[in-house]
Amino acid sequence: MGDSIFRVTGRDAASRARTGVLSLPHGSVSTPVFMPVGTNGAVKAMTVNDLEEIGFEIILSNTYHLYLRPGTEALGAAGGLHGFMNWKRNILTDSGGFQVFSLSALRKISSGGVRFQSHIDGSGHFLSPESAVDIQALIGSDIQMQLDFCTPWQSSRGDAERALAITGEWLCRAKRRWEEIKAETGGVRGGSLFSIVQGNFYRELREQSVDACIQADTPGIAIGGLSVGEPPEVFSEFLGFTASLLPDEKPRYVMGIGTPGYILDAIEQGIDMFDCVLPTREGRNGRVYTRQGSFALKKSENRLDFLPIDQECGCRVCREYSRAYLRHLFKTREILCSMLASYHNLYFLNDLVANARRAIEENRYGLFKREFLSRYNKGAL
Image (cartoon, rainbow, N blue to C red; front, side, top):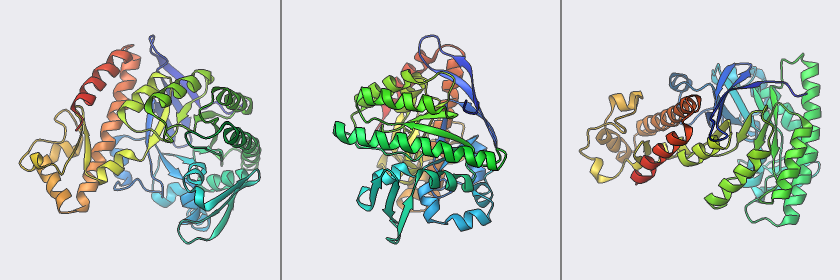
């Protein structure tokens, strides 16, 4: 049996939405949970104090990028990423599989692993399912992901089958290496390994992949291969289909979603965890979230608008700064704009998910979702 790290604490009677608790080495995590992305060991424009102040209990970092910079020697000497970045709470690391997918011109995949060129300096590297586990153990990941082979939207059945076969083989090898590390260190290193469902947009392949993940019995299961260019209705269809196949007792993670609509759809389907770079990326580009939709700070109507970004928001940015001032910062390219807008957007999503948890516990999730999206979609500019 995989290590039991999750328990369900509440359910919505009219949907698959649920609340739960993840028990991890750096503290408990309430679910559903949105995880900010700190690709290089830092959530862009945010300090760890900012993240703690908002209330985040887990963030995501990237194995591929950390392996290239600062490298395993520096991370090992620092005692892992927690100490290196001074983050005292949990870290989930993805395996590098998505970077392999997105940097397809620089890589060659075989059953043995991935041979790739660094996007930084062109140097050659090889990543196997075993070395991905080793690197994540050195990083000190509380949750680590298996190396997987993701295929793009509209891939052929043959390409999807080949990728799925390799992903399945890599899962077996990753789990074997993960169990070795846990045994060698008395369970101190290695965190919890999550398997990843692939299969592109073919239902039978998704079913095969779920069966393989259930057989592997890892502590959690992620749904991969979504939000890769497909239309929203296809995303929703395959999210719901795949989630319905997953075991109830395992935490479920959908990789790479960050808009309120996608998050609330995922929660409705019983998803417990999600992450995305979008809130900080949009913050750096001067787009901020409100309960009436998102808007661009640069718009001229904000020049003399001394209201906060969102009058219903309790974050310190909304308590202390006006739209007019933030527009000024954006127009003058002050770094402070990126910092304040990113803080607000992350606070907004964390608050959205916290309110979703309350709605599930009070058995009114469907009403909560409808009311929120009615306002949000109506006001988006």
